[in-house]
Length: 365
Ligand code: PEP
Ligand code: MG
Image 1 (cartoon, rainbow, N blue to C red):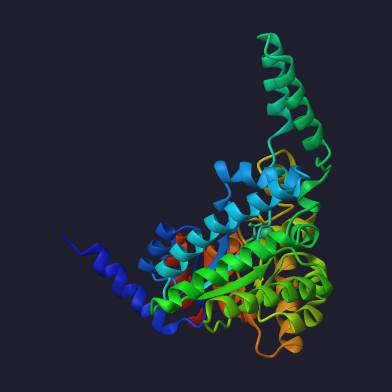
Image 2: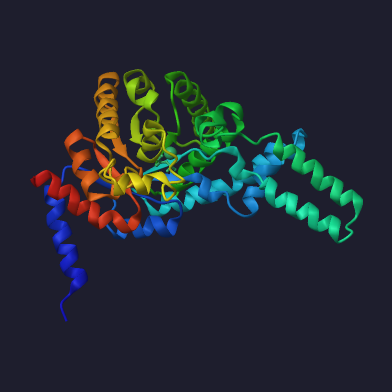
């Protein structure tokens, strides 16, 4: 029997000698982080923290958003803080000694709230079964509240850094949890290396404001825990305005990570959630598009990435630049990113071996 695993490891080790692009993974739980390490990832390029807010936690964040009562809100934040500290402790421990880029909450607000349609159905069912009038009225009140948060275009709405600006307690809670988990691991003799990433920035002012919030929060944890922490703070570049003003944005960033999923969506004005729909398949058949731009980086979007990298390095010569959209694990896109001069790509754990190989092939080419 040939030693397939051994052979693959050998080939990838050869590849590593040639590639200049780093390879990291996108992961948001310790199991995936561990798997990434086994596949050779040199860090976590994207920890999407919204994936930590499913199930019961979604109810907690919903109660924070919908309640006006201060005590209820404080209790929700305290619960989320405790849960997140445990999440980050596990992630940083699994990636001991390697960077972990933690992205602050990003999704549109409605993803944290119950769906109005589901609530409607529930109310109708309650009424049909003759449920208690008070219970029905409570559900109706909840529905009215949730309806007041409904946006016509949630992907262009209250999401990304805008969430942190409207609800500053959210980034404070998350940064506190990140810094506290790191401080505790340091006290245990480990080497946690978290970095904090602000999503969906379009102006330097947004980043400057949230950077200040993060720095102040880290300083408080350093004081409380009595441990020195140096956490880098950076941003995603995933909107055209961010790419074309990257020189300004870089003055407030230690690193950039290109979110090419959103950048493709906003550059083309194509919805990333509807690519299977009517017109993109037809565009592909008629060769109006050579390939699906959400899978392989489009040359126009790549131009924006290059502009963002070049301007970003003008604004901050020490800037680290990577990519964490789906394209980070696509071989053709990896060739383009190598040419542009990114420092690393980040992709799903299972694509890490392919990315290592593609990065070496790009370097040899
Ligand atoms: C992106 O937009 O490319 C990205 C990595 O962020 P998300 O896919 O979570 O929006
Ligand atoms: Mg994005």
